[in-house]
Length: 448
Image (tube, rainbow, N blue to C red):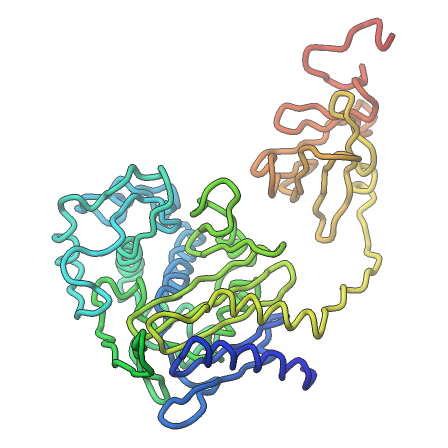
């Protein structure tokens, strides 16, 4: 980056560390799947923390557990609509689905019963299930968003049962190893920051505990570094390294439930926190454990993300800092649009493009890169979707109103396309074309 950009980013980080009294803080910007800037302020063992200094991730751990679940789904070992009972029998909350657990809509209690789990040594799975026999479900499954750390303890056990090894060994083998995340671990290893609480009325520190959470560990156990978390931020932005398909990661980033009412600014997909602000739609997660705060967010559309790690229990604006680092980067070094280039097009697809009509309403069908189609009104609002090919003259909707619906091409006796059948709606080349199979028929006297 330009020296002026790096100075602006470091100054923003320095302001956060100073004004929020963080013992130490590190941050980074990820662009086009690569770590392009990182910085640190404060002290760890008397030194400025760097890109290899470990901090606790807290709930960012959940995004890795969710990825392990989605790998099982993609392998056909489970369906997201499966009730938990099908895979983990014998719990008091087996009616909740896997998708509900991933999206925090299962209705499960937020925290495990007993002592504050983040500050005490955790029990094993059997003890956790026993503690949840009564009153574990606080809300009707599927009724609303209710963040549940317990739900991710459950998902960690789900992964372990399917793979025949601990959730942590699965994460190491299937995610951390393939992505080269060598400095992510369940406990601090090598250079690391100790967790502190900062006195609210004096410049004093209190060391915070960091015990092993046992069966609750999948909710927030992991530690990591700027370098590793930058790779994970890029992963959630679509640079998946083969761990998941880009389509599955995009599915994880799709909104399932909102957290804050009609005009949402925060919500959840499948294991991924979503934030909408200043025209951006971001995906990632925050993390909070005694002595630590963390945040990783990425704008998949602009292919830019940021991350923050600090060893303070509270008081640091990690989410806003991530947003500011992204905005500063784009203000100082705006990205260039990709060059347009012509491509080779199948003539059979080209003949489908152009003007079609749903009743009297004109639509344009356009070819997109990768053999996709876009169907949208020629002007103004209306139902618009993209479609991917699934067979001869057959496409499936990818988004918006027609997501999951089938688009078929109808042809006349000469093989020329004369209508589109989209989820029973008929589109014809001219409004109410009598040669097309318009449901209900066309008035024999036509327009008058």
